[in-house]
Image (cartoon, rainbow, N blue to C red; front, side, top):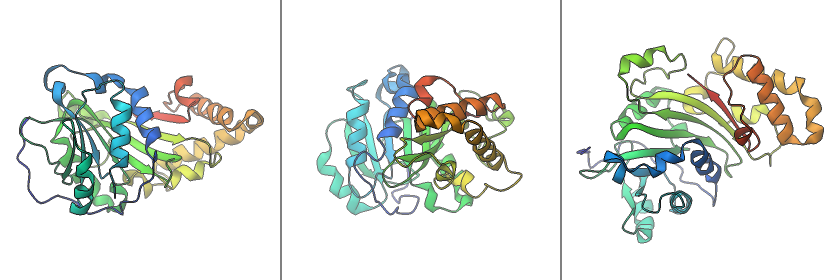
Length: 285
């Protein structure tokens, strides 16, 4: 999947702030959600990359991901992408044969024959206007193999609370995506598979904490009559109805509220492997 990309990165610099293990729960989620995506070696997947887009002022989040993901695939090519030349220069001493840091933006700096299996883009799109959301997604879609994923969202400074879109490059045609009622407006080349809410409970368990870190396509839509507003109202109601379980701990309360939310008709993954670890997955298909 060769690409010729502009030498000028497309996008704007992020604030660049990060912290050690800020995105550990994101990586752990990926390892639980679809580990086979990291280990695939068929066809173009044999040498396809994991891309950490907008890794920040130093290389730590990319290198931490490399350590986690290479436990399941020691040969996984990893690419950290930043739009700030100084950040790239600071990260390049950490490169090796399968770990690279390059200057780029939404026009990923891939070389001839390179492709992408997975993109993590955290705390990147939040700074943009909502009108820029679809164009960023569509540009990134050019580089991702069919069946590949992007996890894109926002976390608090320490990664204890985050919300993210899980979007897949479909195998099917664009027209088949039209039935996805939660498809982001203007985005045609991705299938929005899930909206994931994550907490490690260190900040307690308050539904409004998740509202503060919604991805860009949701953050301005917590308004009466919008699906995300109805979702939060339902979840708040379910936490109130299950509040007796908090005597057993916040984790049990979280689990009980999610199970009640599923009973109300929301397509929630109620497997214990998710809920007991603080992941609520709202499946959008």
